[in-house]
Image (tube, rainbow, N blue to C red; front, side, top):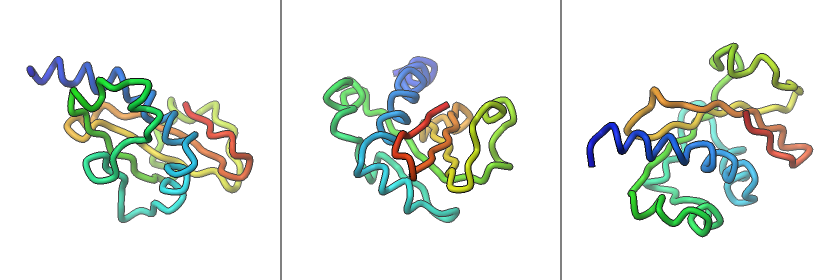
Length: 118
């Protein structure tokens, strides 16, 4: 598959992946355990089961994503300017492994269990 087409497929499912990770209890736990030295990589960690049920083409297209925890000052202002920031809010960036420049940022407040994605 051509890189341009592969990037389109990755971009199409990136938000779905991020939302599902923030709402899935198992992945929620994985997100909370992330620190600055590591990342979640779907090549190693797989995908949330519900995501694959809803979008089985993610596996057949062999898409691969990563999520890293970041600090608020690493989040572009345009991505975070309207986030409600609480003391316990965690910040993440998700991106296709092959296209790290195509990224989405997310703020999650684990205390209220609502998983907020932006």
